[in-house]
Image (cartoon, rainbow, N blue to C red; front, side, top):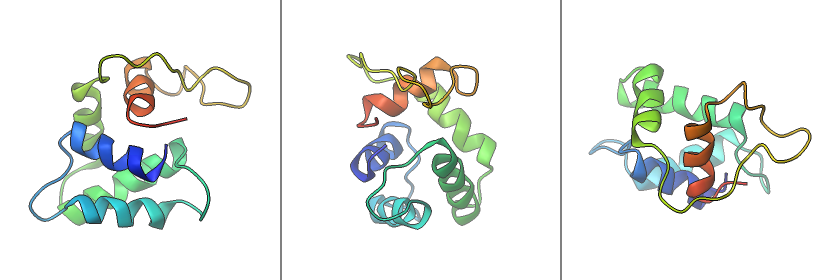
Length: 105
């Protein structure tokens, strides 16, 4: 998931608030990823944990927001197409679709 994709996901899933804005999401992306890399599932989980702490919400609330927002229409890509990619058993398909629909892998 790219930096742009992460910020779009935050918007799509209503994770942004008056105290956690788009710029905060962009900064958070760079805090959990290495320069020149995209966000993987582990980085995404770390980002949600940090976002939860900073916004005084639970990680579970943020995960549910991603799940409930669901995928954006028209996403035909899947994160689980090749060896070494995220396992379908680890991430429900609608979360994978939501991640790829906003600019993921």
